[in-house]
Image (cartoon, rainbow, N blue to C red; front, side, top):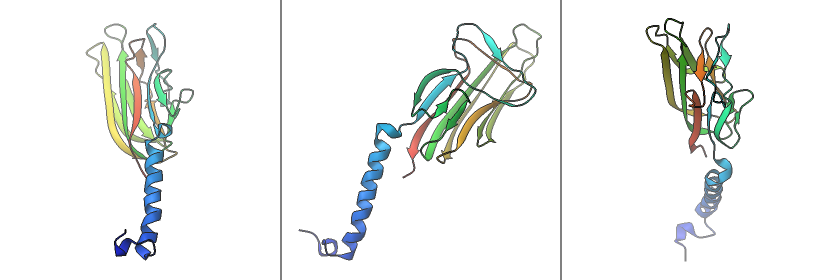
Length: 177
């Protein structure tokens, strides 16, 4: 039934069988609903327009409106996404601010951080208009246990309402086996 090199008594067979079993189990685990990781959140939940910041120090943004949180890896209390499965993730941050009236100071400055280290930053300090917005979009290889967050830089602020101008999203593209 088997080719000679792949008979149940061959050395090759005994090497391949455990690898096939490992591959099957890994595929099963990472294709199951339990390994799905995706979240998308925005700054505020209410209809009223309000601002976050400015602060005297860089501050982690704790987004309060959850669109989706598959895998429950985003913590609304801390604003931190904890990686549960190693792999390549897509991450995106949109930031928006409104000066309220012409001539007021306006500054949108955020950074995407992994384990407290800046991965990508965004900054708009345009004083000639009333609204500023920025976007960060990256694909990153992350390890289980990595902590991902968005920080608002000292002196900057964000404004939001039910239109959800300020968002933070991530999802697992490819899991490491």
